[in-house]
Length: 337
Image 1: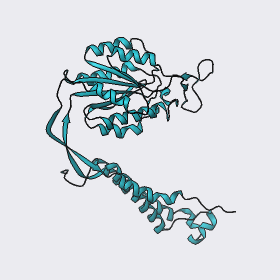
Image 2 (image 1 turned 135 degrees about the vertical axis):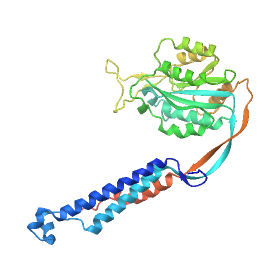
Image 3 (image 1 turned 120 degrees about the horizontal axis):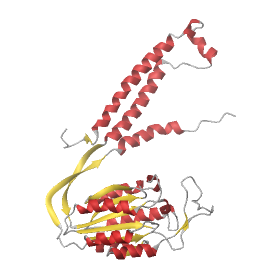
Image 4 (image 1 turned 30 degrees about the vertical axis):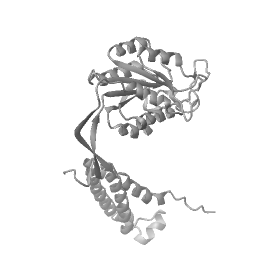
């Protein structure tokens, strides 16, 4: 289908509408079988509700319910298929500055010594980076025990912006902050970029890192032309770490574990990477300085004639209609006194 007007982003989901056919066949056969059941030999149909305590649905009721739920199913599938129309042609812009964000999503980032939490503040800082950015391509890796590449280096920074609400410490099945593995992924992503371009890494963390050889590893990256900046999240006073099932994470003596901002380590890593260290706050100074430090390329910005088409997604329309149709199912039943 030529993408010139209305179309679906994922039309394969429409095959799920065929699931209604076997359901309709099963409903027809089950109703016919129930009408020929052995209980009908012992009583007239109008007496069965008094004998069994239940009432069989009439044909119109049965198929009416089927049609209603079929409509809800169809709306859900249409939303999953991604209807869209209307688009904007945007001219691609290829700057020579690249900044890859490494976001710590370990359990200590749930500490609320900075409101709303360390992870919440980190999301706000990344949002500020995106909204203030005009000349740096961004990428995002979330890491705890295992790194997750949420976005490679891209000019479409709003893709990263849309993924921020889903970032949670629950993404990490195993706890702990393994920065070495995240640096491996970052080195692979940045290694494919031109050496003359500015390549930088921004670590956003509370410094709860306990791995040997981090300083030497970052010094090696700096020798390859990859600068390492750090944005610290948290306070020196710190607070208790909430457990996933409620309560607090305890140490071996049964006392709550206190997590505080490890500025000494984070400043040491930034210095080893020939980068800057900032503490996250409510002002824009921290993100402005990071963007300025990342925009040091020797290559001039390159504007090409290549254009990309950005479609206006409309998946929310069938979802809104679905929610409206489901609202009556959540009405409370009247109490019988």
